[in-house]
Amino acid sequence: ELKVEQNPLFLSMQEGKNYTIYCNYSTTSDRLYWYRQDPGKSLESLFVLLSNGAVKQEGRLMASLDTKARLSTLHITAAVHDLSATYFCAGVNAGGTSYGKLTFGQGTILTVHP
Amino acid sequence: DTEVTQTPKHLVMGMTNKKSLKCEQHMGHRAMYWYKQKAKKPPELMFVYSYEKLSINESVPSRFSPECPNSSLLNLHLHALQPEDSALYLCASSQDSTGDTQYFGPGTRLTVL
Image 1 (cartoon, rainbow over the protein chains, first blue to last red):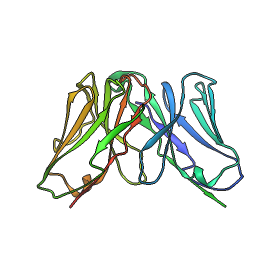
Image 2: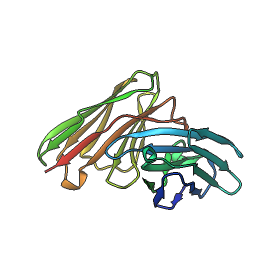
Image 3: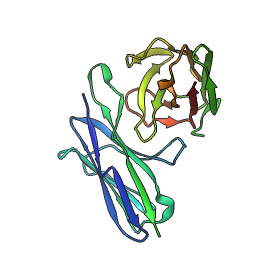
């Protein structure tokens, strides 16, 4: 069954700095999602990456997918306080009885300081 | 419109109570999900409905009983819960259950006393 691991689990950043969150997954995944969750709130879909080499950007966030390395990254450029949240990556189980099921990473709690 | 609605937003119940959580979507999605999320943890899948039929039950205790009355509605009936069942319960929907983007509702914060 698919396993997904994120690192780091906690990330404290200064405003204006760049950083990357890594998401490794264990077996074939049809696609890779990134979600954002603010404290006490629901999950907001940020990106879906469908194929090897896919790159998507929205504002200061850029996500990429390397299916050969089974790795996705979420790069944060010039962080601002508003980006403080928990970020989850999630893969999709590609077969068996769990086909289509999302498997989430542990989440990365991002805090951006002035 | 990518909105999934859930009611109530907050629920406090005793261990002998029976209550229900409700979820609704009008995006024409044919897959709906219940997740349980504890603080600082990722969501854990509980149930998946595909075309109004239960397709995945992640070995959830029988004190949680899902129901899908039609393609837009999903209920979660609660009975004889334990304090450790206190959590945020999230509903989600997607076009189908083969891995399409899931859109999450705002959740119900459940406290079991």
